[in-house]
Length: 156
Image (tube, rainbow, N blue to C red; front, side):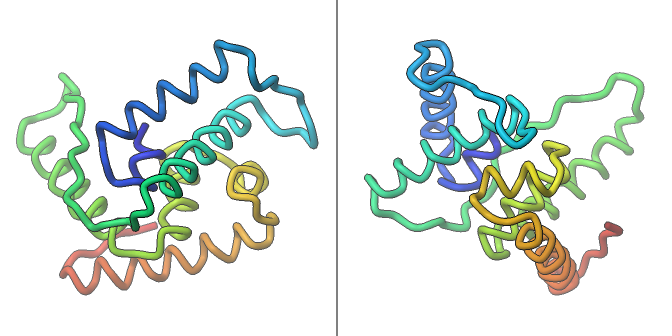
């Protein structure tokens, strides 16, 4: 759902589109066929991306820079101070991600939050593997610059 939210910036609509994505899966209107060693996960993300793009075309609206409403799940083995620092770091990171180019944000999200490989990301985004490597490198530079503008540092 965060993947879709990253594209459309509306949590309620992201939930709806996520349900639509799984409805496509459940209804069988699209069938998964292994092609070029692409995984089921890659195929599912591609459907979600297409749903988000269709939504944006219908709504004719652009990405905005609203605050992220991502809720963190507490780890019971952590100290409250550590959890608070981690939450603050995540808020800064999400805020910085919102300010960079949407293509950079999408590649970095898929790499770091969904743990996908560059070739899988390329299939989701309709890019070559080389293009995803370039987007990731540029995205890291842009994210680091944005974090520095915000007065934060982040090791990638």
